[in-house]
Image 1 (cartoon, rainbow, N blue to C red):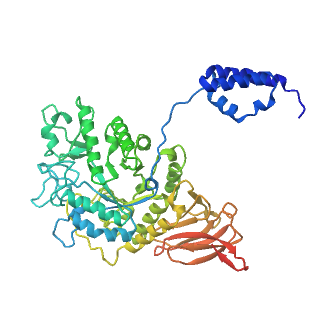
Image 2: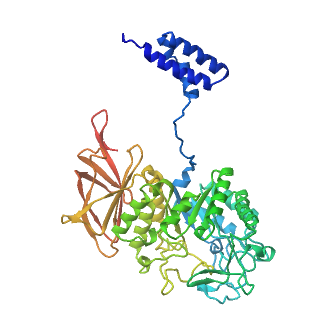
Length: 548
């Protein structure tokens, strides 16, 4: 107060005059009046709100630099938090020996809802080719009754915009989509951009495929595997514009049938510019779309697919089995820049993948792998009923199910006494009820000690809700053969806990009174997982203590 600001006002007047010359009309007139007032020494003009607003608009920024314009994608919640269940519609018949239908899948919806899944993913539902059709267990010779692989798409009945006649009609499919919605379930469709030799595209558009020197079309290969029943598209063909538009139209067609979630088969083997154009143009028109990338390839490629438009991705969780492997992998996935764009979806199994930890058929392994998939990441999925019924026999020498549903119709006894359906339902219920498990950014690993060193077999990690009120601590015994005990470290100060607090096991409803930083845990192969909710000690207005 009382300072001489005449020089400051003249400096301000020069800036206002510069802004006035950069403006026009009424704004310029107001600024010129303000310039004159400041020259005359009017301090109040320097604090006028209208002048501040006009200066923010019109003052030239001759030396300002601008960054590139970066797109920001806003996804719906299911893109971040979802539970997927995969089944083959043709294996949903209620009696052995019959081809399942969409109407059978409708009857299966209460079961899927009981398990707690909100996305039902169907492998390709299109007509299947006859030429070079694969037989049981990927045999090169198919029997008369072998249904073929759903991924060998297309025959005289139609292609990617048709349904297999034995599954039903488009009306039946739309009825499935509508009925699933009543259970809070969305139908996800498999998009596999490839054709059987019998697909109408092969006859009508041979220019969309790559020809070999002998004039035949190049079939798909993934050495040492050969897929004579599948022709890949040539995304770099001279007729690429027509091909790309047609492939985009396949998405549009199924969007028109009510589908908003797509699992895309092997996108890393297709043209990246195609995906960037196709997915982003679709999202611009249908912003609620979700695309799951099935790309088991180099991590940088998987992350690039996320950058160009894929919402979620399969991961290498299936092959991460030790404590060190799981910890390192999760830190990679939940740390920027990977976590800025890549949303993992953990699957303990798929029709293509049965890893060695399952080969002994131990119930404890099926429990721990599902529990970790469902709690380490906010999105998870499983291929059933093979998983809950603990199918575990591989093709000799290969990480793949024997008697695989990719090549034959299976009948499943969903009421088998050994089924894990109760555990899976409980697991998804816990996920749904606890917001801490709805995201990945708060994941934290905790030390577990035994005899003053880090425990090799007990893995502990936690997640917290954004407001810090919901705290979930998971402890897993990674050894399927032995009981292990140890002391888990709890960050008492970080979680704002009192000296005494409660660890409520959401799987068993057991409640343990814990105190201090290290607390005892013991897990056996029969009960290999704790999913604790950590509850703080509270006092009500009458002085009674309780845990909340």
